[in-house]
Image (cartoon, rainbow over all chains, first blue to last red; front, side):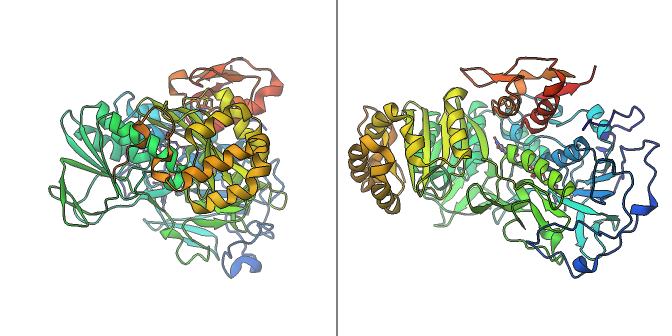
Length: 535
Length: 65
Ligand SMILES: Cc1cc2nc3c(=O)[nH]c(=O)nc-3n(C[C@H](O)[C@H](O)[C@H](O)COP(=O)(O)OP(=O)(O)OC[C@H]3O[C@@H](n4cnc5c(N)ncnc54)[C@H](O)[C@@H]3O)c2cc1C
Ligand code: SF4
């Protein structure tokens, strides 16, 4: 399992970055002499079992064409896979390519990406790049030498436009075709936009550089959407001296994702830093003067950034027979069909650890899923289910937020360490009788790690929360709240077993705050800051 | 194997310390990684490669001397 030695003769990956959007520069950074195209893998024989289309949900027991001539060069790999095509050259696609090589795959890896740049990292776009702390070239995910070592058949500025399931071929915008024995789909997502005048979005390096140029001191910036992306951009723009207005349709930003109490605390940070946060407003369109709300009011702005979520890039899969439902639908092995896998932001897969189908737009998931899917692609039939604890971080003002697990649709959130108003806390999330998530702000890693562990082992809420019973008692008094009526009833039934000795306190606290969710956060604490709510 | 760690890039995700705890730790105050062993022994190489691959900040680089 050693990485192939770097090939000094290989052409640098960055050499292709000047390629124009529709020219397929076909930069191959492989070029090593010992990889002559083997005839045996050039024309895959179509397996009748798969010829009818790439049926989704089929466990990938037979990759590609089992009776195709085996790729003799695929040393260390049992399956007859000679050519892997990866569509989408970013975090997930790169992780997949690297894993294939680390696992000893010596066949052809074709990596297609529609951006002109060599793969770069996106999280710094709304952080260090937007604030000009880093230059663009710091975002490149790998050096030229590292790319060369992977011996990829890399095609940048190349957009895949179709997948032919019968002949197992990917078509590109310029009409080229790339045959494969196994396919990895890592095409990510693109931002949703508003009707009306074109506004800024923030997904690519170009987007970030374009926005950065406009964020001069005094510039009036309206950010539509107060999710993590919008919040980060607002925070950076304030730091650059812009006048920032943040518009959010929900009454409490991020409440659906992290719960009301945490959502409120994060919103307070915006107000403390001089951002005008308007919640409960619905934006109809971007207009010349700024944005128009659905009631007709116009909010004036010099620049408008739209951060209202994303669409998976799956249009190119139309007619392929793959099931696409808000992402490429995969089984727990990240397989969408025999020999076809998906990873990263575009993949919706069944995560057995939580028992739900999820699609995760997190940087670590892109890498981890790219790795897991690549391993399964090489070992069909003996693959491993992909069962991660999702993780993301976000930098907003002076807060560093870390979240583990699956927080969405939680029944209850409790502060188990620290305090919300101090913006130094660890909140635990319950779904049914289980700990499913944890979110920390300003906590040391050693305090967070055991919670991650508990989530990974599907620990019962009672056990997990019981381990911090000392802080639990305080936390309940100070900051308990719940997300609604369902949560309360769920708590009261599990409450007695869940918290043992403190069950009476919990029951009271939950009961008391549930009816007044608006004032629950920080209610009994001296800091009134947390209860200010504007809608 | 030589491990290089680009500290300013680190986002304190802690994936490295989880995957290769003998080679990486995290600072208590801000969670930024600490490289414990820049030339880890052979039996650590697989987990170090895994850590470098999974690091969401591309802050870990491996070179073969
Ligand atoms: C501004 C910003 C900040 C972020 N901050 C954080 C953060 O703090 N923490 C965190 O955990 N996550 C963060 N994320 C999310 C993280 O960056 C993503 O989860 C990650 O980039 C997903 O990687 P991916 O490879 O799955 O998809 P992408 O990075 O979207 O890559 C997909 C690639 O495929 C290409 N492509 C699409 N269609 C085609 C086609 N038909 N043919 C060829 N190529 C195609 C795309 O152009 C793109 O290059 C952030 C994202 C953004 C945009
Ligand atoms: S995995 Fe990378 S970003 Fe995370 S702590 Fe380690 S070095 Fe830092």
